Image 1 (cartoon, rainbow, N blue to C red):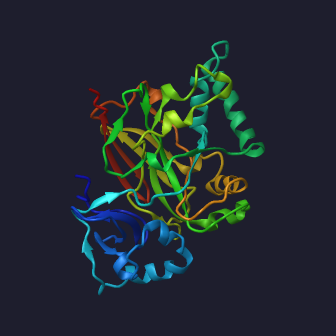
Image 2 (tube, rainbow, N blue to C red):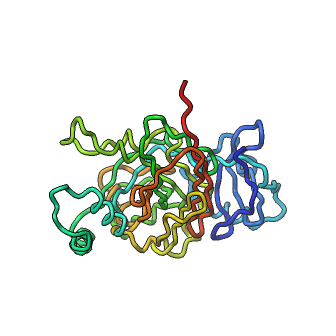
Length: 331
């Protein structure tokens, strides 16, 4: 069973999650570091409340959440044994690609044309210069994901039989807390309610379409299988993260560290990515902005996910994920 069995860990005095007791409906919870939780439907006297509807009133409810977290007289429940779901069901999921400098360089080297005669060292030096130029002159690269790919932070991930090269991609996800459209970079973080952990699984074999190469990448196929985006466990308020551009992301597979990088390595900052998205799309409360994955993916190491593999993901201040890969059973 997907349940809390270890002490929680996150920055600040509280975080938000979606939890359930055995056989009961999920509820929006306010979690505190003492491993206790409040059912916010009861505490706010709103029986139909969800984390997404709470985020629709983020500015109004944030002071109440702070006060509840500090009130020991409330009806606190033990967190241990509760099922942990993805913390929010977003309406929209935006995903930044190639947004970590070293990751982008490594991918360019792996996928460079066969007629590129440069040595790896020469190619890397050229790409370092290109990343500098891109950061100044270009725009973030963003595509759209599906909310149906989201699963809980401790749920098994089913690897479809058609996925021949499944890979991991740990990402910091910004959670939107107010409607936003055409924001400047300076305004962008003002619409972020908090942050959470996302693992944006990718089938490397499905990224590029061989039948229609002029149309490029197939993000639907390679990233949006059910459960390909483990999310959570918690949404940590933005005010608790001193500098989202200076947090560590670490992912292990079967105990071996694969990704270990700081958000300092981003080419475009979180604010730049959010601002860029808002120039085209209207951001809504509860939406997710995945901000890219650092270097250390399996394809770089010749290692791909297999039945029974266990991924453990940590982002400093946001908690931990643990998901097990299970091969799809076909008749």
